[in-house]
Length: 173
Figure 1 (cartoon, rainbow, N blue to C red):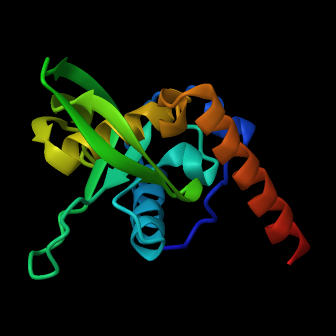
Figure 2: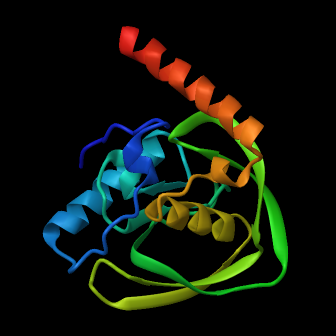
C-alpha cells in the first residue's frame, strides 16, 4: 500500500467526469488499498479516485466515528444512486481537496446506491446520516463536482482564492 498525494482545488482533474471501471483487476484492488490508506492518513471519511489524479469511478469511505466501534472501510466501484429520498438533510461538509474549508450543503437525507465490490459482485445499500452525505459527496467527485459548487458564487470564489494561495505557499516550501 502506498500513500498517494491528494490534489488540491483548483485542479482541472477535479472537474472532469471519470470513466467507468471496465473490470475488477488486481490493479483496481491495489488502487483501492492505496485510497483507503490515504483517506485514513489524511484523515478523512471519504476519498474519490480523481482526488489522487486517477480518473476512474472508484470511491472509498468509512464514516464510523465512534473510536470504540470497528472501522467499516468500503470500496465502491462504478457507484450509482438508484433512489434518493424527498426528505433533505443539511450537513457541514469539508473535502480533502479543499483543506480546512467547510460549508453547509443540502442533499437528500437518504440514498440507495448500487456498486461493484472488489470481487466483481453488485452490491446495493441504503445510506442515511453521515454515510448518505459522504457517498453523495464522493459520487459528485466522480462526476466532476465539488461541494463548493453548491455554494453561492461569492463564497465559492473566496474558497477558491484561499486554495490558490495555499497551493502557492506549498509550492514555495
